[in-house]
Image 1 (cartoon, rainbow, N blue to C red):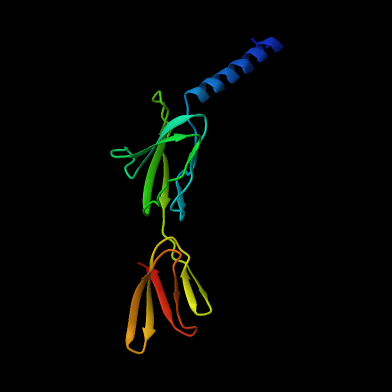
Image 2: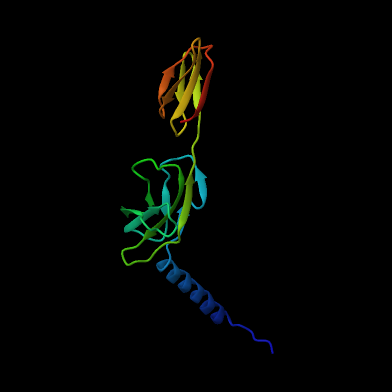
Length: 163
């Protein structure tokens, strides 16, 4: 037996779907970024939707959040005040009434990068580098910090590695 839906029935079905979607938004905090990403940015922007106002941002190297770093945040994004160490982090936000977002994950990776100019070399990566220079007396080494510039000869051979 075939059943026809009247236009009023379709309107009721669509209205129910809209109400369900709105209720899900009330009980769900979608996280936006980063979600399982690798980044060289040691101060990534964590963002979420669905909630306005104060939330507790939680960050931990343990997916079970055994000893999280927490921060009270207004709005829908948070950037750490200090650079994160390299490694994998898990994060979530919790509303004042205890509603929790799904857990996000981000892996902060190192980037060794240098720029060389006329008589100088600059560490443009996100980690200190160990710089070895060939000299007449053998190799000499030094650590060059992030965004630090050192003087070198234009024809001098150097090797840069993560410190």
